[in-house]
Every structure is written in structure tokens, then in C-alpha cells.
Amino acid sequence: GQNIDQPTEMTATEGAIVQINCTYQTSGFNGLFWYQQHAGEAPTFLSYNVLDGLEEKGRFSSFLSRSKGYSYLLLKELQMKDSASYLCAVYDGNNRKLIWGLGTSLAVNP
Amino acid sequence: KAGVTQTPRYLIKTRGQQVTLSCSPISGHRSVSWYQQTPGQGLQFLFEYFSETQRNKGNFPGRFSGRQFSNSRSEMNVSTLELGDSALYLCASSLDGTGNTQYFGPGTRLTVL
Image: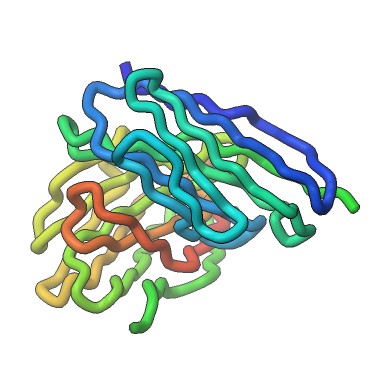
């Protein structure tokens, strides 16, 4: 079957580092996406990984291990505005579909 | 480049009515996907259009339909509205839908009374 798992909720402190994990099982894999969604708004694209390893983009980094079906999003120097839902999505090339996780709701406290 | 636009932003309808939502993709993008989002259910895939053809479909009843025009603009229609259809409807565009990054519009919030 096709499945993406992420923790439902996480809490962190302003200035800290947080890691949001995502594990997936899909029939085909052609890339993994991370999106950020603030309450009441549309998802916005954060990162894309198709090869194993770490992709760094400012305060945000994303890691992928295809053999383990595992990715994480790392947020450094947390700010209050980082409070949002973080969505993991995998493109299944066999079925030509983007499979979405339910999202991880991150609360950043002062 | 202008982003994805959706109209209307908010809609209130009553049960049994029908509704049409519109989406204009980013210029040059030919794939448009539609999603329904409700609290606790995440993003539920409705359908994807490419070159005026429905290329992929989610598990929604036939009351949900869509189409795409030659300029890549897309519409979705929901007939015989039910209370459970209240949700945020999002459209996302990408270059050709083959694993390219999807960019979302602001969504249409539909409330069915």
C-alpha cells in the first residue's frame, strides 16, 4: 500500500532546533517534498529531495534516505512565525500521484 | 510571475445546491490538481488535469467533477452539495505534473449550510 507517516504534533522553543520526521511506503518513488502551511492559508513549497543526502536552504534543511524510506525536515533558530503545519509528500511515479502525509503541527513557544 | 489564483475565496451554499470553483495556474504550467482539505483529514486528492484531459482521479463521488480549458485554467464543480462538502478547496499547478513542484493557490473556503 501507499502510506506516509509523520508525527501529529510537536512543540519547540524559540531559538531551538527541531527535527520533523517522515517515513513513507509507496509503490514508486520519484521525489519527496516538504511544504509549510500556516493556519487558514495554502501550503507553500519548502524543499525537494530526490537523491539521498541533505539539502540545505537557509534555516531549513531536508534529508532523504531512499533505502530506509525516511526523510526529515530540520528547522534551526526557530522563530515564532515557524509555528505551522509541515506536510511531507512523495511523488509516486508508477501511479503518477503525489501522496500526502497528514502533516505535523509545530508550535513554537517563547 | 503571478502565482496561482482561485476564485471565489469564500462561498456559502445550502444543501442540494451546486457550486463551481475556478483556478488559474501559473503562466506556463499545464498541470492543475485539485484537493479538498478538512481538519484531521489532510489533503485529499480530487483530480488532476493536463492538456484539457483528466489524467488522474481520487476517490470522490461523481458529484465532484472538473475540466480544464485550452489556456490551462481549470474549474471544478460540486453538485447536490452535502454538509460534509464544507472544506477548503485548493488547486495547485505544476509544469507538467510528472513530479514537478506543485504551487498552491490561496484556496476557496466552502461552507455548506
